[in-house]
Figure 1 (cartoon, helix red, strand yellow):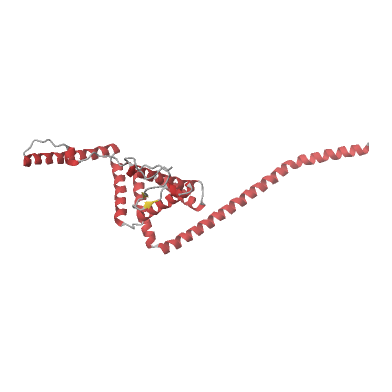
Figure 2: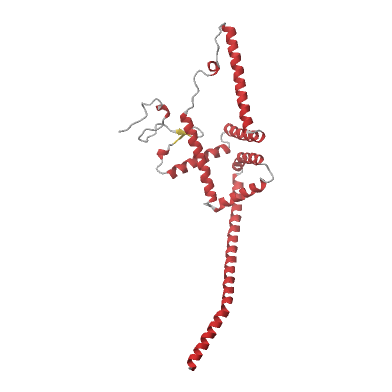
Length: 279
């Protein structure tokens, strides 16, 4: 017998029955419905779908498909980096709290004084009477949604790193090896904040430039990848040949070292055979 949460006061915030059938869909970055986990037969399929969805959303932002949205993200990220580089998190939180409390206190004071002057009563209005008519509550469904979203993003990053570290594709891992080495070298001379700002600006600039010059850049990239693969193959062939040469030389040296012992053994055996025949 199927039981549901329909009789519970918080039924509107739940998205499942005990039978596992979803009542409503979650929503992604852009507000489009996203299937729940129960729609997937395998966990790996769900992870692949989530990874593709996140990559698609990030690519849409970096391509400036919605200029207002992309500009807002760019301004928010750069502003955060500048603030964190110039002020400590404690200073930033204290400043925000000071501004919010100060503005609300000023607004409440002006509102209550104005009401007393024009209404001729002595009712003492509080901030709740002016700013909030109902208690502020946390929407638990939104908390769960953004928590799941954070977990999905973290999983996507971890899976991408695992593909690079575990060498799923040699070319991709080689590219990231070069990027990480250059970052390692440059970070010794340039601050991390400047590197982060350069990375963000590049991430929001290069995809758009690439789409504008896609044909020319694709030809250059393919040519570079071909040369890189040829160089890798030549290096592997040279390394293999060198190893074989070293092994052959080692075998030859071992044979020369063991040869005198073999000759002495043969001489002893010959002498013994001659003595036996003579007897």
